[in-house]
Image (cartoon, rainbow, N blue to C red; front, side, top):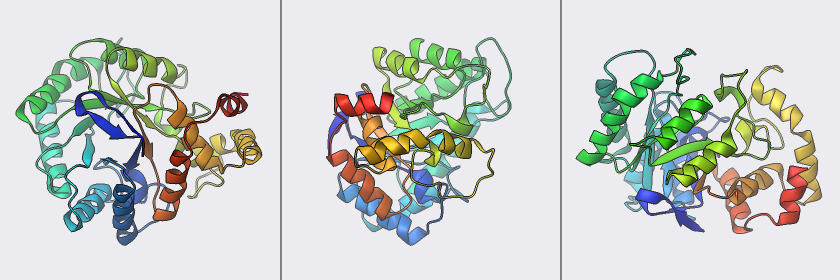
Length: 313
């Protein structure tokens, strides 16, 4: 598998195994298949697992990955996990407790990358439920992440860069800045249900460019737009759910995939892998069959200019 530059953490595989799929977020799976999928990904050259306490019931992604790594230790594989910080107060304490719990479940003494999973409120103080104020992020979260990195409990820290664009861009430009940012990268630029500012256009391309320009490694997420860029949604959602709306809107994409002889999921992943400045693309696969499809797509290499033009049109 291709290896790419990942800033402070060195080199990383072009594909990262995400924790959502193996935790049942994107359709049903079970622990045995999740563990087998982790092993298969590592065997194929994947060098990072992207987990979170919120993926699955009772932190299932961390528990499944921990079981896989206890069965077959893989010290070279980097581990990402996350912390959610809704509400006010005791940010350092909550960050520390979340980190310790994640380490216990995974079976490691440090994380390679620790991400803020909560989205950033607008810099001007506008409020959206379940997001974190810019001032709290800047004055309390960032210093604690820096302290944890200096203490060796994490090797790097980052943000989930789907908050308010003004705040995300400010976070990428100001110092200290994140080591990495998870950025929505997909063929139709669909943020789906994780983007709450309906009156503010997403700025994913600009966010990616600014991150690249400031030495922040870009982790591409939502390559298949929560399933909307696949052959069929693998979970039941109401017709007005963002994933269902996006799936209907993506019908021309599926036609292009058929014309190019690709499955929609394979084309979506090859597209994300072809976007300049993306260090690694997170997979939402839930089993070895879906993993194999993505591995084969990566092996075919980036899209040609003609193929990118077809997708763009």
